[in-house]
Length: 226
Image 1 (cartoon, rainbow, N blue to C red):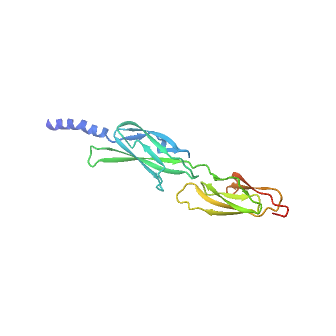
Image 2 (cartoon, rainbow, N blue to C red):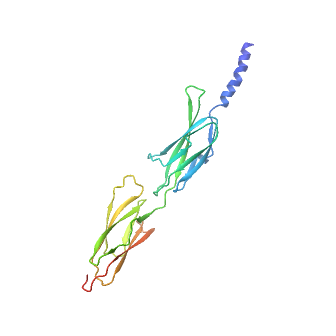
Image 3 (cartoon, rainbow, N blue to C red):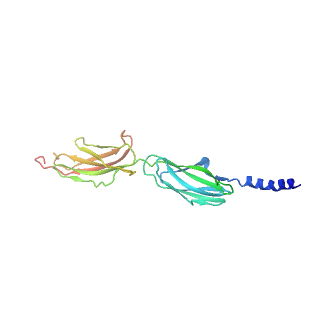
C-alpha cells in the first residue's frame, strides 16, 4: 500500500518536471534578420517559460556593428530590439546574437542557446572629391592638391586634357571605412590668350559607372605665350 502511494505521489511531480523543460522560441523567420545599409531597428518577439539573456557576438572579424536591448528577460513574451549601425562601405556584413535560456531546478544549471543571424547589405559605391573648390591656376602653370574619398575598391580619375598630370598618394587608412587618396593636379603654362577649363572625371576602373565631373580653370596667357 505504501509503495502504491509513493508511486502516485511521484507521478505528478515527474510530469511537472517534464512540462518545465526550458523552452524559448522567436518569430524571426529561419533565424535571420536583414537590414539595409542605412541600419536601424528591428524587433524579435521572444516567447519563453524561463529566464533568458541576449548577447551580441558581432561579426567574424570582431566588428561590433549592432546592439540588443534588453539584455535579459523573464518567462512570458518579450520584445527584443536589435539596433544596427549604418554601413558605409560597399561590402555586406554579418554577425549573430545568442539567446541563452535556462532552468535552475537542476544542478549544475542547464543552459541552452539559440542563435540569430544578423545580416546587413552594403552601401552604394561612392567616390568623390570632398573638398572641391573649383580652383583656378595661374597662366604660367602650377598645381593643386585635393582629396579623393571612396568606400570601395574600384575608382579611376581621368582628365579631358591628356597634358594634365595627375599624381596619387594613398593615405594611411587604418580601420577607417572611408579611404582617402590625395590627388595632385599639375598643369603647364597656358599658351593661349584665353582662359581655359579642364574636367576631372571620376569613375570605376572599367569606366562603366561615373560618379561626377569636377571642373577647374587656368587663367589666360599673354600674347607672348604666357
